[in-house]
Picture 1 (spheres, one colour):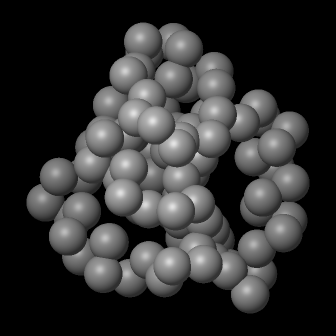
Picture 2 (cartoon, rainbow, N blue to C red):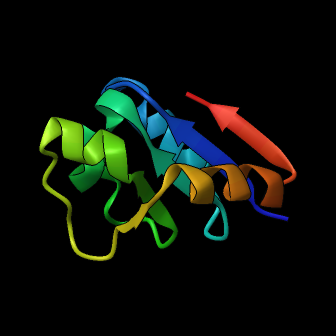
Length: 86
């Protein structure tokens, strides 16, 4: 089962380490200030961004990013067996 990786802040130093731990079937959700780093995560196939956070920050979204609601975010946390907050 996929792991849900939740990023809420800019972690430029940790990004290479985090990317190495994200499997191709894992799901990544960007929230809060991590929305600014959407382009750095654009290579991931299951990239999601929280709609309210992206809108509040005026974040530029690369192609392929799925914008999700708070309800969809909760559903993802229930779908995945493991959740990791970065």
